[in-house]
Structure formats: C-alpha cells, structure tokens
Amino acid sequence: MAKILMVDDEEKIRALVKKYAVFDGYEVAEAENGMAAIQCCKQQEFDLIIMDVMMPELDGFSTVKEIRKFSRVPVIMLSARGEEYDRIHGFETGVDDYVVKPFSPKELMMRVAAVLSRAGTQQQPDGPPHQVYEKDGLMIDFTARKVSINGQPVALTPKEYDLLFYLVRNKGIALSREMLLTEVWGYDFYGDDRTLDTHIKMLRKALGNYSAHIVTLRGTGYRFDG
Image (cartoon, rainbow, N blue to C red; front, side, top):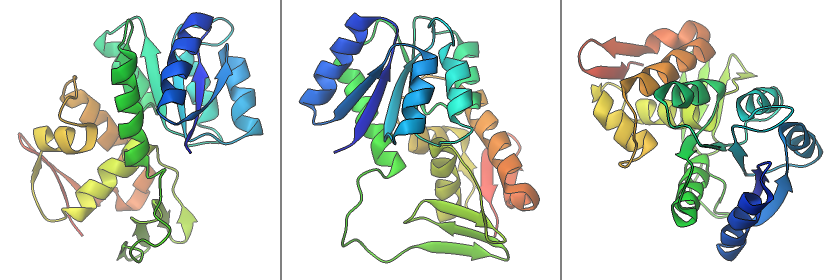
C-alpha cells in the first residue's frame, strides 16, 4: 500500500483528497503547513507527497526544496495559480507534476497513480533480472532505479530518472521534444518545451563529466550517445 502525505493549510481540501485517496487504497498522512511536512518526512518515509503552494510559515516551493535535501520522494504540487512561471519553477525545484486549483479529485488520483507508476513504487517480487547500462564509470540500473558515477550514487528527481531512462533505452535514436514530452510526461501534458529543456539542463548537471552523452539536436530534440 503506497503512503501519501497530503500537505495543505485548508482542512477541507486535506479531507477531500484523503477521502478519495483512501478509497483508491492509499494510506494517507496529513500536514497543515510546510514546517510540519518537513518534520513528517524526517520521521517517516512516504511514496508520494501532494503539496499546496500557498501556505503559512513556509510555501510549497520552499518546503520541497528543504525536503529535497534528504529525500527524493515524488511530489505533486497544487496551486491556485497556473502561470507558466510557477510550473517551470516547480519542476526546477524537483516537482513531478503540477495541478491547478480548483481540481478534480478523480483526475488528481489518476495523476497520483501515474507518478507512482513512473517512480516504480509498486515492485513485483519475482520480476525479471536487473536491466543495467554501463559506460566507463557510469552505471544505470533500470530495475532498481539507481544511477551511479564511479561507484558514487547520483541523486535525481523521479522525473529526471524517467527522462534519463527513456533516453538511454533509446540510445542512438533522435528523439523529438514532442516525443519526449509525450513519453515521459504523458500524452495529456500541458506545457511547453522549456519544461523539457529545464530537466535536460538539470540532468546534465547531475551527470557531470558524462553530460556530453546527451546530445542536443538543434530544431529537433535530443539523443543519447553511448
């Protein structure tokens, strides 16, 4: 059973989301502000966080930034503002999805399921052997969702894992921006190319000396060479 942390200063919204999440079989904990959310994440592990942006004491973006210092748990951000800047800022902070208020609880639960699925939360005990890509000191374990460079683990957000894995699995193939957005973010993604470019930039930074394996195809998209 996946465990969700619902963070919102409005009790009615927390109760509404919890009602639908519990009905879908999730275990739900609540936090009424950012500071409480950080403490919850330090005391126990969660499979996913649903985080409001506008909260007293500490806003959602700042809360995620603090949580990212010790956890890579997937985050879905809730906001009454749907401006492009907010979405881009959220993705740069390490958010995996962005939902604008007012929202449909059913749609939110579909997004929860999609993010958890991409994050590999539900593992099959008798699944296939590990699928691993290795190039010099770079090691990518698809099955365990782990990346390391010269034996040192590389910390990535769930969306960065998804993007890197898709690039590597299709290495040597020119991938358009539209294809990457559809396959990694989903066919119903609403945004623009800058979301992808921002994640590519963050991914290259995390890969360090191996960033050159991600090749920019001017006017087309990206390709992983290796």
